[in-house]
Image 1 (cartoon, one colour):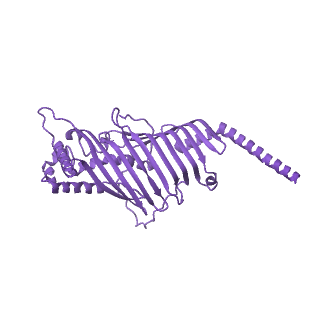
Image 2 (cartoon, rainbow, N blue to C red):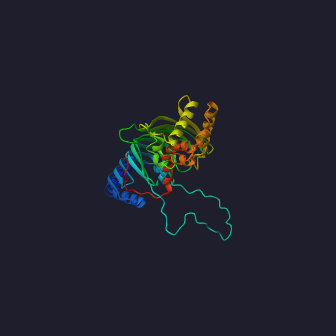
Image 3 (tube, one colour):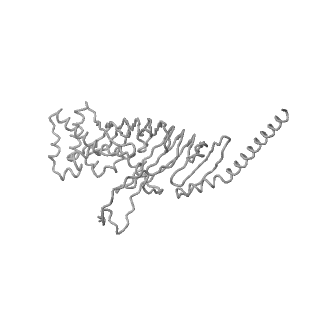
Length: 405
């Protein structure tokens, strides 16, 4: 019995020593070659120059990357990674923990490339009718996170698609917590919390954005609350400049609050939205200056809203969409806006058609139509999420752009 115990002790000791030697060899290899391996893989994936100051790991296979920089696209002070070994062995890129400290991610949206000699709306004549093809769902990368966190991050979105000027939207102090997020089938509930600040312009109050809730991808159910406070509508002017002339309307400052309760059941998503104009500053008329007709329309619209909502300027509307194919449009908003005008008409002697008594050419010099004034109020709110959502299939650039932010 004693001989057997000694043999077991020797075997156990050899196993411990072997594991220690293996850990030491792996540690030395990763310390020396790990940075180069990861850098090459990221450069191959992004086509951007990538540098890493330090890469290492501790017992328990906790990985750490210090000062990762993917030129013009992404950088972070530190990244802590704990992979799910059993998930990796099953062929999935799975993590128990993934944490980013002070990351900075940049999205740049550029205009589509136009090839000379090709008409984008050219008619195509088919030799024979084609049979309808069932749409195929693309295979997603089998990646998942048990715990995902971002601390003090920065998200930069640069939109160069407008003809007038590019616009830069920055979300700073970004903190994110995401639990049980998997891009492959797994019957779990994903919980998330995201919040950050939006510094619109120097010396002015920052906007605040907050999103929290949960999603069950297996059942296609969800519940979330989105809040964006102190939206600087003047800063987002390039998005609706084709509808509104701020100078003619004498709008010098405008701030909005936006909130939405999002409920999804069996893939059907309903977002009940509330928007309120909380601050507007109008440019004073100069001595002897006559008021533009676009400004008169603005006055009438504001008066109509205030008459219905006890002095407030607010609007409620709903957006219906699908969780697996989210779409955001202005049809619901347009209906709500027109309904608010009719409500105001019933509540007062003012008639909405009075605004259309102005000559058409005069109105086009300020607002292209009466309804477009309301559409312009909400366009900037959807611009951030809507435009970033289009980035997945578009070309991204990393050249710097001038901005007021």
